[in-house]
Amino acid sequence: MGGMNPLRRASRKAPPAERLVTLVGRPGCHLCDDARRVVSEVCGELGVRWEEKDIERDAELHRRYWERIPVVLVDGEQHDFWRVDERRLRRALGA
Image (cartoon, rainbow, N blue to C red):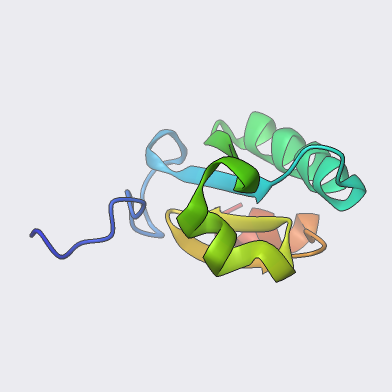
């Protein structure tokens, strides 16, 4: 299984505690602040773990996502960028 994406941690049918939402952004980004509020609220309500990654500290994330931040990944797969839709995120997490 060496070729698996290390960010992919759970299937869509996995329980909330096994899901992971990643917010890729940077400090001083107002859209990132908006996305953080949505991700924090939705994940908090659903019991889903989430993390934040600074695009300025990771060359690979910078290369992949710079023109789209903030980017939200659900279980390692790109879910949204620029604006995070709360209802769409809830559906992706099975709510």
